Length: 369
Image (cartoon, rainbow, N blue to C red; front, side, top):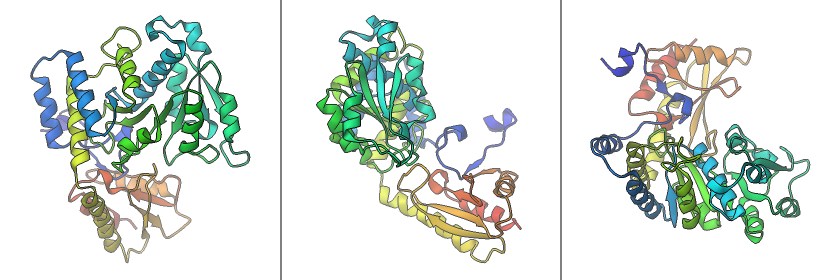
């Protein structure tokens, strides 16, 4: 009996993608073995952190790195580090009033539920522009938004942002001229593997990635890469130090697990992985080619803007509700989770599937009428 069966739960087939609410992604056997090995022995946490951060920085071609317990925690710590730099004293001596006077500049088009951690820290936002192209932000707008209380500029590098903000290159150029660090939120922007060092080379102080998405590390982990001195400040604020970072615990298992996941991600054959995903779409498309109620269309990129193809299984009858198809998949044994994204059909994303699961999805969809 599996642990999920013992708890009365049924594992699912994840045809949606690396969504946190579905568990992120699957860790490899090598990652799981490394985590188990780490759990068997004690190690001074600060020594492990220093070694893991240095090893990941080298693997990802970055001067510095840090492992938080998620990308959102990374943003929280990055803003704290930026405030320390702005206020010119260790963060533990920064007063509430000094935090409250600090702000992060960001484009209104880049606002998202994850950036709420900035408010949780006690800082504020200075939003520029609108979530459309009616009045795009200019270089002059950004330059004038930065003042003596600006701690950082936040940039969301994702396929979910609306139009209206400046490109990252121009954002970094203005911020660098004004002496303000740029925090790039690229939580779901792997692949491509080059993103691990691309934003640093462009001049970002730190780039945030989720550890539990396509890196296939522990879900309760994140990755920060970039400037060495900036990440040393982050490390001085984060766990296991007393203060705001203490509650953001990262176990030795997660540190070692993320290191192993990054190592495998950097070394893997990404072309072969891309091709495997395309093959899964081809299998689905061919199997349902003559289905009376469904069509299959390859779409690219995926919902987060990653260079990963998906299949859209559409309803031929435009009068039918996609919820019917979603429910049909979830009634399968095992249940299949896929999202419609408010379109007349569902997306089948191969990035979280393993060998053979596409066959189960095909059989389930064949029964739909």
